[in-house]
Image (tube, rainbow, N blue to C red; front, side, top):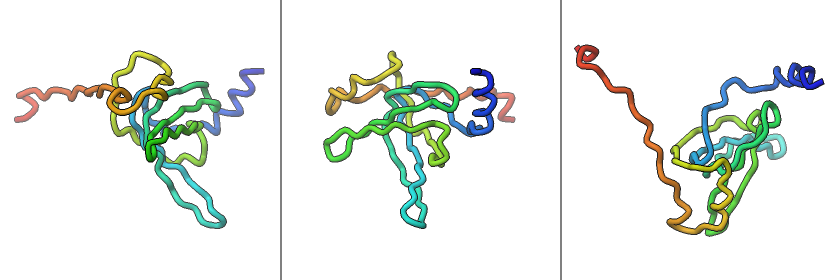
Amino acid sequence: MNRIINEVEKEYLKDDVPEFEIGDNVDVHVKIVEGDKERVQIFSGTVIARKGSGMRENFTVRRIVQGEGVERVFPIHSPSIVDITVRRKAVVRRSKLYYLRTRRGKSARLRERRVAQPKKNKADSK
């Protein structure tokens, strides 16, 4: 039964989903339909949770708007999501960052994860 569901869902999975993890700061480009018009709106924030697998995989993004915390859950493979851009990576030690809901100001910040650039050899530069 599960194998049949996976076969049906396989054609709806997106191929271009970027690699992002919990704690990363992302821009989610969401397609919004208003009447007969379509526009793309960007929701920027920190990924605090990821759950599910396959077609049912979701991620939660949290941001602060006018001093109020706003969270939104996005299905990764939804056709309404145009793009996901990773702006900043962070060092985290948990799989869910729900504790950020109670934090304010500097205590709500996450330490940035520096991505090492590959070193160039002197022989390559000649």
